[in-house]
Length: 114
Ligand code: 5GP
Ligand code: ZN
Figure 1 (tube, rainbow, N blue to C red):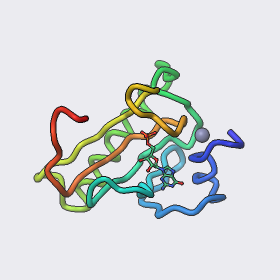
Figure 2: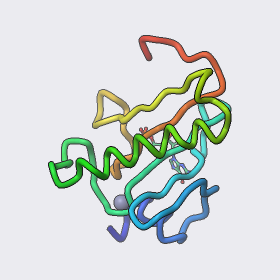
Figure 3: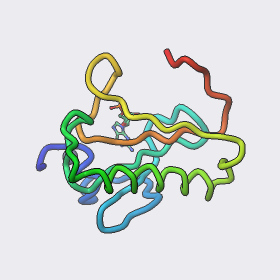
């Protein structure tokens, strides 16, 4: 999608600290980190919100979760713990309308979230 911020990051039109890339996924550091590790795992294909996911995306979503766990492991947080979050629409505070899986690690995270 031409005017989507995260599509622009995938196309390298906007710089980001890239952590992982393959043919379907892209992962990069959040610009406003909320924990020592705060990464965003996204599909390269534009999907606006979790409401727009269909059964054809099941494998893609599985890959996103698995990739987040692998990134946490690479950084040494697998055993200590980490959190993965999708925000969807207004009440959850979604601000970028290209689905992204937040990966947070490196500090004690409160529950329930605010
Ligand atoms: P949301 O609130 O939609 O779940 O999360 C959007 C995330 O994208 C926020 O954590 C925000 O800090 C991050 N973000 C927004 N703009 C940029 C950007 O230009 N570059 C990077 N790396 N992250 C961004
Ligand atoms: Zn997009």
